[in-house]
Amino acid sequence: MWERGFLMEVFELPGSTIKGIYSCVPARSEDNLARCVEIYGEEKKAASVVKATGINFRRTIDPKDTSLDLCVRAAEELLTDIDVAKQEIGAIVNVTFTPERIMPCNACQAQHRLGLSSDIAAFDVNLACSGWVYGLYVASMMANSMRKYVLFLDGDAQTKYIDPSDQATVPVLADAGSATLIAPASGKDVDPWTFSFMTRGEKGDALQLPFGGNLTMDGLAVFKFVTMDVLNMISEFMVQTGETPSTIDAFVPHQANMFMIRQVAKRLGFPHEKLLESGDMLGNSSSATIPTTIAYCRDALFASGNTSKMLISGFGGGLSAATGIVTIDNKCRLKVFDYGCSEMKGLQ
View 1 (cartoon, one colour):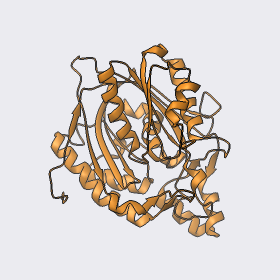
View 2 (cartoon, one colour):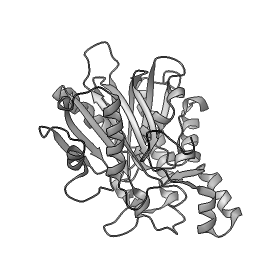
View 3 (cartoon, one colour):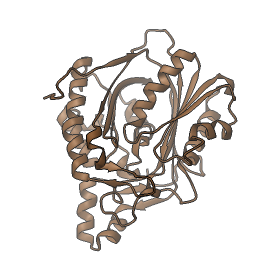
View 4 (cartoon, rainbow, N blue to C red):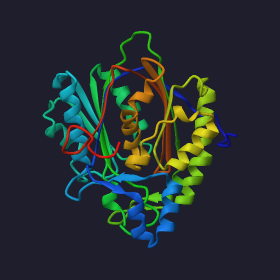
């Protein structure tokens, strides 16, 4: 099954504590069928596209807003609800491929807007769909090294970079921003976190955003990457970590499109109830889909107990993939809300 020619590397970290995951989505919810009728010109074709993607609604950002706005709003709500002194936060890690500016980076601007200490590390990571898993790995290492909290932001305003008539990207892509607060490992008997990574740079043109251009996607090439390379990667990762669908409480993949992730879950042997989904109602918001889905599916996440061992997997632009197994408990604060509101007023 695994044909990379070498043994996959699996990296283990002490199990940190995720104190909260908040996701802020644009208040505007686009009916995907109506939007597809506009770009395809006929309802029958539009309906077949919506059925193929499984995405019924997409949250899309107002042109005046940015990915930084969404992430900062998520962080403000999270830090308000969790009693953490600002001086206890040692770093901000921000994952985005749609920064507000090339310089200064979003993380530096977030430090100022959130009123955090100047005695803090702050930097961006330029990644798309695999970015939340990468960011969680980096943020956890920093939290354990610094013995401080790390504020991990992840979000994109990718619909600002697509051709409004593009039949490949419009029916799928959406926007969101998220904030995750990570505490260092406690030293108690906590399961370690495990991660693995894959990069296929030679296939990178399949999903790209050139300077001054629009985001483009070769849907078939991305589909093959996910259903072949990524599927094999996750399968091998589970073998090497000794995990099976019965030992995992929830599978949380990047919400590329619903048909694709359901196929992956089925081939991995996960029952439908263990596959967490939000993309049907919120769309594909790049790497922010994973934290958004975790927060959106809180009840399903803890359906069988007070802790949840999650298999997370992000895949897409790069072409890049990252997979991990992390555990959270039901004390973790989880929330999805509309930008400008403290609750989600749209479709849920």
